[in-house]
Image 1 (tube, rainbow, N blue to C red):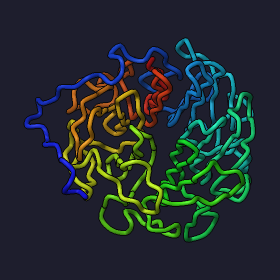
Image 2: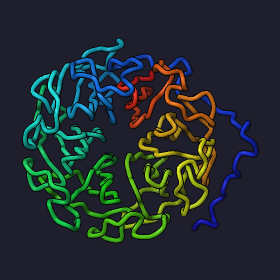
Image 3: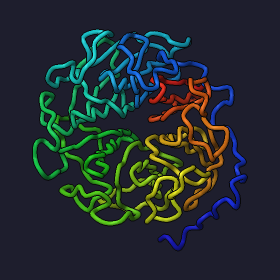
Image 4: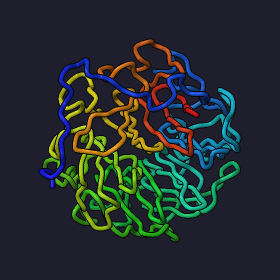
Length: 392
């Protein structure tokens, strides 16, 4: 397969850095979360306007609601309508008794309305799905929540809402078990879960209807019982190391395989166990895995721990997290293609948080973890800056 794919050449010199801004060069129109230079290293007290290391966000429609995984505070924050002003306070909270408390599972035991390190979030049908990573489960609401502490309707990865052991307390894994599920995506009836700690993606052919429902097939492993990193060997076109976010680009499945510092793109949507991808971005071949392809500084064709991926118009966009930037590709995809788009840095060779300026600005990023798009609005979970950005 690899020999049939054109591999783009690497840039000839460090100055070969022509790019297009993926998002407006004016920066984000709306900033949620309070942040100062000090907040880059100091946690913020929970309130309706603060976040601590948010990793995921989901704008349900162009007008709202907006739901954010306020990961470090172990809660979900909800806005009834799309925020229109900086620092606008959230309307709802799920996972804590009020806006001023924090702690895993509200410092108690798991419930249908508590979370522990929530990360991935997406619309699924008329409802919402959340990767409740450290509870080793995915929560599904049949309708998008519109109130405080609305309990989820379905849990996957556990038999009920009150357990949270890794792989249900077993040494091995299976189709109905999870270990750190960080990413979720719903597309045309299928639910995809990046079961990160088990080094795989679980897929349900239809939206699950009962607690603990087993997945139908798996990517990244030869069967549902395996969980080895890269299948126990070197990286291949079908193996995974640290899978995270998923997206659909021109009817093709895309996965951010952060541990192998690459994006994987399948031709179409795979429907069988361990199906190989068609090509990768961030590496020049299927065997490569080093961050920034072994270099200290990034290039237009390298990635370092890409945790997020999204599609905006013709652009495929990645949150290149450890390089504190967004990079984008458009037109025909080829193996190792050089990125044409950039946001968050002045040039492709920089990886400094907030462009080395210390404090954050409207157009800077620090460890952007999640990126989603709704219509013409990009929502960035700018985790290192303790904020969420809405680029309109």
